[in-house]
Length: 157
Image (cartoon, rainbow, N blue to C red; front, top):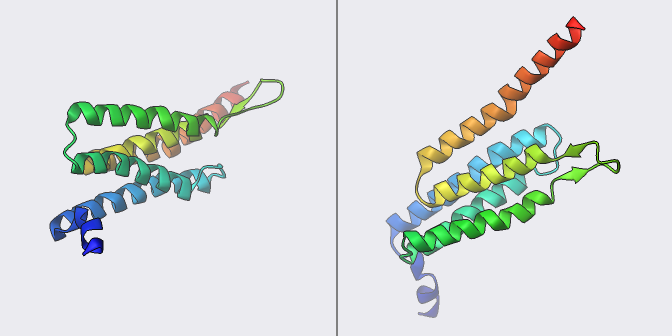
């Protein structure tokens, strides 16, 4: 009896499947961005990005299940964005002479992963998938283009 009451938030099969799919999708999309970062040797990898996306999805999913209105969800999202800023700040490193800053792209990736998790949690799966694809495009194609242009510029000098 007590166990049934404690787990009653997912008593309907349709709701259980919907929540499960949202959480799984958030983790998978975060994992894709994390894989790209890990593959290129950056500190925040697959697990970090998966947890960030999953956490963001949960933070908006639960209040939404409780009937939170737009104004309350807006405050939740504001809190998520502010809170993830601390996590992002931890990925940014400055060299001793302050001439070089590292980790800004990883930080921005964590920020994007949070937004993707929020989108999935709110039920905007197509938007989240599109955001993930654009993020991967930026992380891979844009950096390839920049490297190619720098090589061409270096060859002209």
